Length: 528
Ligand SMILES: *[C@@H]1O[C@H](CO)[C@@H](O)[C@H](O)[C@H]1NC(C)=O
Ligand SMILES: *[C@@H]1O[C@H](CO)[C@@H](O)[C@H](O)[C@H]1NC(C)=O
Ligand SMILES: *[C@@H]1O[C@H](CO)[C@@H](O)[C@H](O)[C@H]1NC(C)=O
Ligand SMILES: *[C@@H]1O[C@H](CO)[C@@H](O)[C@H](O)[C@H]1NC(C)=O
Ligand SMILES: *[C@@H]1O[C@H](CO)[C@@H](O)[C@H](O)[C@H]1NC(C)=O
Ligand SMILES: [Zn+2]
Image 1: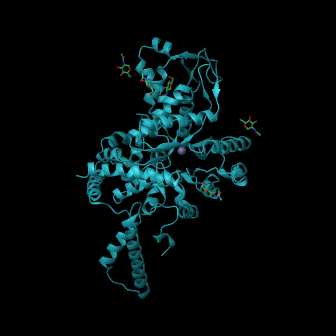
Image 2: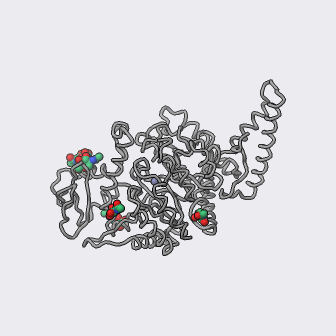
Image 3: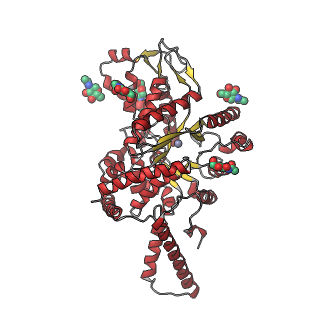
């Protein structure tokens, strides 16, 4: 029997409470018994029909090893669990199984699913892998933001658009020569709905077209992703919009029953109508202020933290400067700032090892700067970029963004397990960015089957036509969780999102207590 079968709790993993502990101990004894039985059989060379009790014990052993497999459910939870089981069976028997389809085609089916409605109502804990400007649905950006005064738009040579708010007529850009005041443009347009739809189309990857035709390769989908991003930057970095957008982001997660957010944020230069700009400290302070406002309005929302991110396309000297600034921000804003990460397509950017000098500065100076590296968001096995997983762990990362390639790296996987470095699994992102087609084949299926430390998150929900966390929970629970994942799995995933957050142990206790109250309410309202 490999070491992988061990049920012993490793440090860093969420602690089981009370009866769960007893249960864990029982399971461990069962495990030992089963292993002995198997070994005895093999050693004595018995060749008979397998013992049905032994078979049942092995089945139970596997069930107990999955995410949430050691969770003891209350009577009400068990009732809700059997309801969920029936719903899932029905969903799997349907003609079109949403997790087997591309999310753009599956979205409407998911919206009609009774499991999805339950997941929306379920208190999901925290969202730990989400990016600053892909949270709020693009309809709000178009219908609210672009209708504000002083909004200019220009058409680029490559069929994209750019925006700016300005008190004066903006200067031409190299990629687009003439700006239009949107108010004038709309007045001259015969059908503004069509114009608005085309703007929306430029701000998201979501499309009604066949996704395989619209995005024939990873290169194409990443190019469009980066174009959409450039298109919306001019809107969201305008100071008044920046505040509103973040407030709206918190509202979107709050409405989806998420109570805590760790936002990966570029902290870009934010500008005013007169063209003056603010630095990163201002931006971080604004995040802190808006978070405080929001939690004052919604006391059952716990709050948010910021992971400062920089594009991995920068050169070494820029990276060095940014790491130094990150250390300073971490020192000056210890409450709101969680740490540091690199963003952008791993396959195109430089690997972590390329930046090893810059990334070693904090530890060499004895300064704390927690890392939350994206790593292993690739299917290019064996390339230099594929080493990012192991390197992220060598750099003492606190969590791993995506970790899609983890199951192909046994050493990285074991380190992640032993050190309790959670993988942030973002199913819809991985599918839209073309790493996996059918969610049942997502590598996290294997991780969930052995309770590897992981959380579910949504990466860039607005880009993918999703929102909050519920769609990704659906794909995880119904898609790669299979029929075996149950209410205990969902409960464990929610608890994981608090346990693996960058909150202090004391803060975690508080959030967990808040979450438990909402969870109990959810269970009692839905278990019938
Ligand atoms: C736009 O959003 C802001 C902030 O969320 C809100 O106060 C305002 O009423 C909205 N305006 C419209 C026209 O929807
Ligand atoms: C404007 O375009 C939309 C979308 O193409 C269409 O549904 C609508 O009927 C059009 N309205 C008018 C007044 O032509
Ligand atoms: C983006 O905007 C341009 C200019 O309005 C338009 O021609 C194009 O169709 C839009 N793209 C999408 C994907 O909607
Ligand atoms: C690195 O990039 C920055 C910003 O693009 C640039 O100003 C600088 O000259 C570059 N440094 C080197 C050594 O290439
Ligand atoms: C690793 O990171 C953790 C959390 O940020 C920190 O407490 C610890 O000191 C770090 N260890 C090293 C060797 O950098
Ligand atoms: Zn990401």
